[in-house]
Image (cartoon, rainbow, N blue to C red; front, top):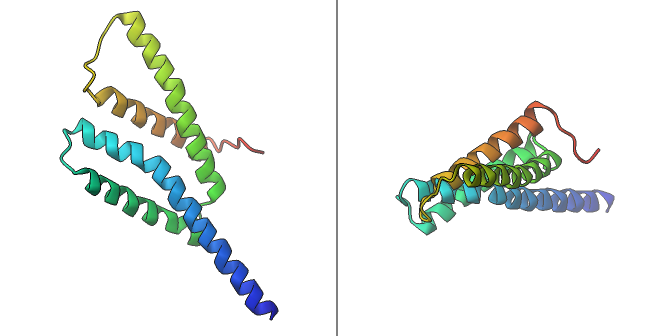
Length: 135
């Protein structure tokens, strides 16, 4: 009986890890894919973008469940990504206000650049600098 319970616990734990990893990767990939699509002039339909995000999220979640990646590090990446997007957004806003430059409302290039810089910042801080926020 103990073996069956341990197997069920292991299965439930792996399923929960998979769902959390898929959700985490959707949070990371959705803004990137949708803004890249908009910046390129929307060559992909909305449903194709959603499918691409789903494939990237499901594919990225496999190393979390079966490999060397961890949910904790993914959570740190998501946190740092969003905080750096806010921080770089404020810096960019102040730079635009100080310089007097204006952008068209439909221009998605500044938003895409912000997401790219936020990804770079999060990658450097979490994976290169071995940042440990919650220790």
